[in-house]
Image 1 (cartoon, rainbow, N blue to C red):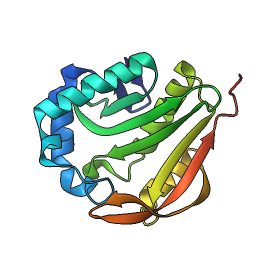
Image 2: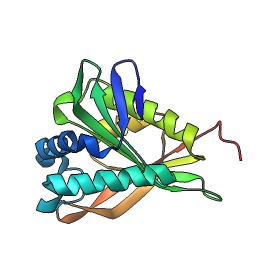
Image 3: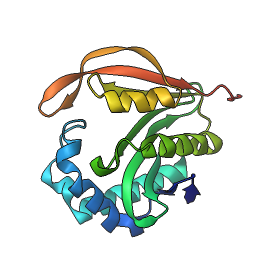
Image 4: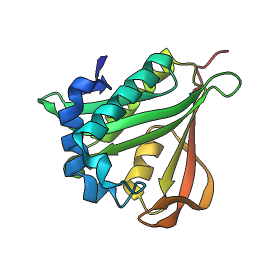
Length: 183
């Protein structure tokens, strides 16, 4: 499935994009290591990314997860970011966990916010979602700004909550409530 925003193209997971996804994560591995859980070497292989894309596509079909990769309209062959909605839970929770990242070379231009907004609108159309939860490192000011621009509200602090770079790091917990949700 393909969606468009003003400047971007968003595509859902498909094994045909394995080369692009592999390149995206490989090129950004050092940058992402500061913000995401540690990955072993196998993660940075074509075979692993192919299997992960198959799993993501299956989760999308079952609506247990939704995954988007985004591209500039002027360069539709190179991924500049990814968005995930994992653990989509239905009645009684109607919730999901939100994650996103962007190529370090494209930060600060509003692309991540634009892509996330488009993906959020889409996932709330196709899945029964009342609440979207997100966690962000306490010192990741850029990511915090993305969440706040999207309408997320800070709900709390999680001490030593996620293992990143070999240590448990503090995170802030944010949530977005879908005011248009109806049971």
